[in-house]
Length: 230
View (cartoon, rainbow, N blue to C red):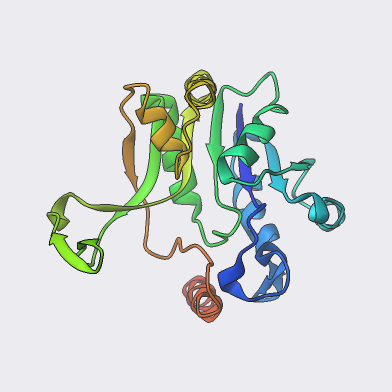
């Protein structure tokens, strides 16, 4: 069985929403609901776990309990860092869960194709991430001075979900805690074990909602998808 963890405890200051951005609506539905619904309809997904700030726990539970089609969602208290939120969520993983996906709650546009590909990749390889080739030229800057231009052909922009065999992810978190290591994503913790992490092709519409400008972009993507269906 596959369990999915949704870190959602970030303050989201850059969104200037006056609330946790996962409660903001995009095309009539809260971001959190859209993110969870994307996974709830996929076969083999047996558990949805949301890690959110303590002040938002009751609100999140009330919201998710009101939505049909989500099944039973577990809401746990998140931490001061993304890594701590996921660690808390891992404590309530089902005994039946052998694959764990981690997905940003603020990425409501993830496609079923990407979810299925990452889930399959986790089963096949043990560790994988959704990503897309970088389209921009990237510069390494030190104190305002450009010091390097990496080869763009080797650069990928990392997204979520990220998928792992449960034992691998648990070992990665155990090692990170022992070493006092704080990573920017789950894959960076797994990489420290010397385990290869495979990149799975996603799509550029799988954006993370970070600033106010992202909301109309997301709604435009949803409108385009609806037009394609009709």
